[in-house]
Length: 471
Image (cartoon, rainbow, N blue to C red; front, side, top):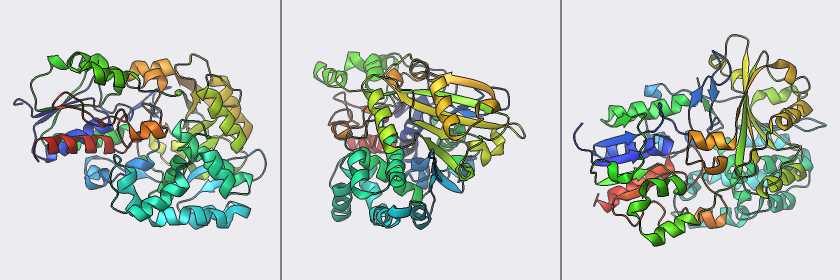
């Protein structure tokens, strides 16, 4: 290949998205990936037994199917097929039926009893205005195209999930459902803007669903890589970049890295003032992940839970809030909030005939070495008695293993940095994608809009690079 116009470090979804933007603009692009396969946090491996496909990190992809950039790409032509379960999310309880998030807002509301109308009043306006909100919510802070819609959303969303749930809902079922959705924020539920995260993920469930790729998350990454290659882009795997100075000359270098590995790779070419700011970037809670090979589906006490691809295992708002606060403050709990995916109920290609998989993680203190396997299994047993009897094999990924696999996940922080108000605005600084080094950019989830498999961080970084080049 001729000397590249642009180099991308890292072949995760954001790195591949950035490369695609540049390649579609006619640039010669080469991507360097340290691992043997593309994907970053969006890949699959046979972690337990032969024939079982497990997603290593991200697994359910509501933001991918709803991504304004991914929607413009012909990914189906490169093998990507989305599977949408009958229900998006189930939230079981110790007594009574589970709360279920359906694609239909109306059917979801019907599951919530006394909060039926309150749910409609809260989510209806957000779902109706989503096409006008997504541009602002999935980009850097800037003047919005639809300020009235964004202001209405902000009045509701810019508060903690705990406060929002208690103010809007009278019953424990709706409050707990919102708590589980908001806990994806990886900040305590009494910290803003955890409420916004819960509202966005709920709205996306009604607008585009919570699907996942048939055959594993790797299929999404492979489709992005396949399309990039069709545009003339080159991907070099098993090629770690340890020093920015060692790269061939290029007009732009885009780094799908969080601040700590960026400093390791490019610290020698960055000014001290910028390095100090990156050094104050805050990483948050870690993740402790478990995958299982099962000889049968999870035996949920409430069989309606088997309709959902994602299950929030944690009980009440109060329990979930306590679990997240403990992890944030460096404590472990006997009852962690567990996020679970059950793909093989809807995608039998991920396991041998008649067998199943389960994918889970819980939040733990940053860099924690605590073993959470027994606590996670106890939480599942709480709502699915007999679960352990169906386990054929287990595989654990600790926070340290997450960081070993992907140095951007510092301390096991799969969000690549705290997502509170401060770091949603200055992510990682107010330069966002640009650095003081001419032609050097950040395109990871440590830039706006942050965590999620949506490619928008890569898209915005590449657009910034093109603008700087006069395009």
